[in-house]
Length: 126
Image (cartoon, helix red, strand yellow):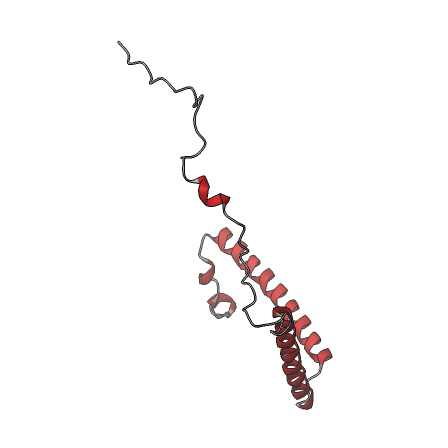
């Protein structure tokens, strides 16, 4: 014979959603996660965190402006830098195509790609 489930009392017509006593902590007054101003300080007596961030960014900008001035004094120019970057992109594109061709040739010959490097006078570290 199967045991019968325990009978529920009149005030519990189903399952409870939470254990009794756990919800009490939620009934307290709301406390903000932001710290309140310390006593004795008027609003605005302390610096606003955003103002501190702005000040740090201004200092960083000034430092970068000094570095740019130093590079210009040494003879570097923005146009030269852009040209150099463009040449590096072109070099990398050509190198990628070369790597692809070496890979396809290695598959056709059934060898590892690095075995083809000496044949074409290439350094494995290039």
